[in-house]
Length: 392
Image 1: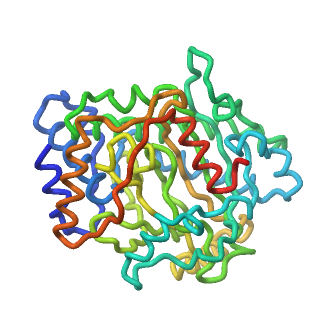
Image 2 (image 1 turned 180 degrees about the horizontal axis):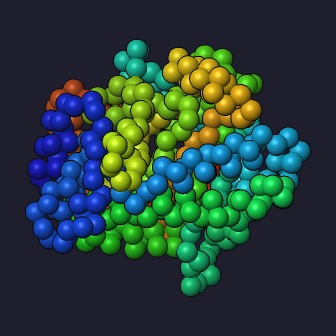
């Protein structure tokens, strides 16, 4: 584990590591190949807060079908979409309309401190105005029902199925197929990360067995919000454990790596000709940060309209003139179980302090040390939802 701390502090590379889930799946967990890849996965999350994951089982065709259905869904009028809102449940199932969710960083002192410590050229677009994000979102639950009565029923509600017949008939099969692919891939990575941190493989997946996992696409109307430098999703971290992304048809996602503080324009690689599967982007969330005592830090990111977004818009208009000009994010939130007692794993606390100290020695000021207080995961989620104006 000492090697993890040293590597996390010393690795200067800006490129996100590519982790091969197939090595872990095909090899005995005790094999040198599996152990090495697991160590790489843990090191990537500690060092960068993000990585690229390859999974031979994931079909890019399933992602394309998913993007098509979501484009059609969000091309409906606001009145049709509003029928699928569930504000009383904190918007944790169904649709969230544009200009509802607010970026937490606009009023969160620790987050504003993170921005202030970035080099001016690496800072996100301005969030000081605290305007709500112009994106919409849909939450489709992909969790396994718990065999006990949860203390947080609002976070584990039944799914909402759109009413429009032409969408309803395609909806559930497409959502379940793509959602299961994303869930399986990110669950595998959670096992790899645990092994790489010196823990039993099931440490994280057991804690998330009954998590309210969400297939969580966002939708941004680029015909309406397509001007350059429009902030579609303000600078923030995700409240869940791990977030996994498939390819969007429009660039615009930027992430910040812990080890450099540089703003990275995300470009998920495509599978090579003849290569099975797909590449996916994974980012650490707040639940992983909490459970590791800060050994892993939740990854900051934003979505904006940049030159690459505009170029993709022009190509889409030319090649698919009859399709909606809507940017769909192919996003999945993997959660810990709502009733799980969230607290740092004792074996990781010392390593977290070692990484923090090593980063400080290298001139990487990570701000004030965070106290990760024990609480139920459901309470942590509710606290975060209040910050972003999704729960009263």
